[in-house]
Length: 295
Image 1: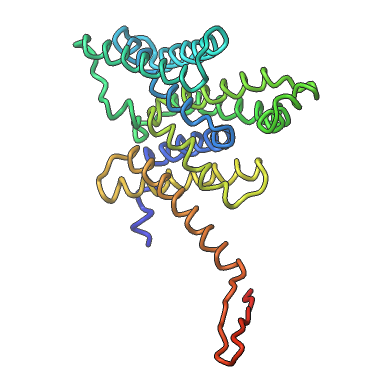
Image 2 (image 1 turned 180 degrees about the horizontal axis):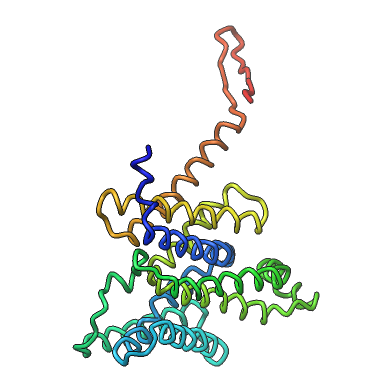
């Protein structure tokens, strides 16, 4: 078994593991709320809506993280503006802006001969090239995410069940929603340079989905989701090393498979623990049924 884990002794893989672990922590916390509140479409829209900012930053030589942050901020602000000022629903506003921002990004890329970034890197990042400088924004994002999640936990919980009760209790549900959207944006933007837009969405959703069947409280779900995310990073990197596959795609696929396996395993355990009713018909007249309950 030593040969299986030997690649983890390489320094670049250790940095990749550390970067992936930080992303897993951020996405485990934020992704729990994304799943609970049904905000998966927003996370995906922000992830792909950053493309214009990334493309413009790459063409002009500006920091990619700055371009991604500005594009994500524009996307988030525009969604809120359309929802408040227009007659469009939340998901409709997101859908329109998602397509518009993605199209704008493709136009910038297609008309720029100097755009040298691989499309695979945009979708799945380049986790194997993570350096110390790439880890600093992730550490800051993880600290900010933990802090905001603790401070606004009660507001998030009550708002998720009934915003009117949250308003009566003085928990300011509108502010809680803004902060939650900000956390989703922070998770996507901070993780994008390391894991790309598609992989960050996968790590937002899959680990939280995998964790929910095994937990009863939200903090426990966050913790288990972070652990599932770390497991996906480790397994994905090892698969990539031994099979020669793309690291980001391997991590994303592993995370999705863990979600399906977790759900299947939990369902099987529930079926085993559920009482089974067996009806046996006796041959003697009059015919009657005998019900046995098997624990």
